[in-house]
Length: 327
Image (cartoon, rainbow, N blue to C red; front, side, top):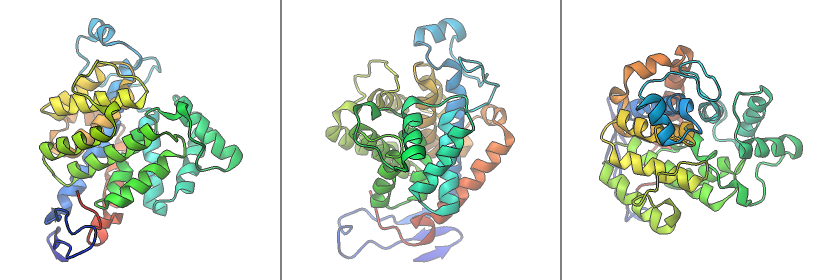
């Protein structure tokens, strides 16, 4: 390993299961930190923007707002401008846990339990059920359940992806373990893994085409995520969420358009906005996030997201030693 001014250079593996993989030739850690910060900011921004129009249809949004482009609060939760919901709050639980305890599902679950006891404004039904199961039965994973095919586990994947850079095997293990605290369904598991994997690609500065190729392989395995014939349906069902996120991410040409187009789809707009915000933030980078949106967020939240992003990158395999995974 050669380290110079924040740039790490790794040699291709000589043998073993990674021998056929494309090596991570040069990684600028400072750029990765910026992308990680932008990804966590993207979660909060997509959440805060989308919460205004959660549960509205696209036509209702158009009639009421034209195109919603500014963080204004309100919505069914009557939020203050810039106020975030469970998408960001649960993401913070995961990020704080990893920073302070490494990846420890029980510590994450304890933080979820404390958060639920604080009586947050919004909690998804599946998340609530899973956290209550942990509180009452000390179980970190419920049995497989058809009702667990929601998007509540994938919405909090950004910290997991950052902390597992760039180890693909570790990402898969952590993605499923954090998901099963509240969601145990193959579609939820697959969504967490695939969102985490495209976050890895974006955080490492890979091209949109490499991300598209990865997702096409994923869709070959999970056809329910296919987005090319998108029907405009954005519900809490994780397949609908994935289609919405992928459709708008690959069609947009800026962070702003990506998030705006997603949340104006309506439905579960805050969660879809949080997920696409994480991906778009990592891909487009900090400079592409509109300052007017960042200024609407609570300053303490913005500062914490910066500190968390740096800590998670530093604790990741990429930040410590040569990566054991590749793409």
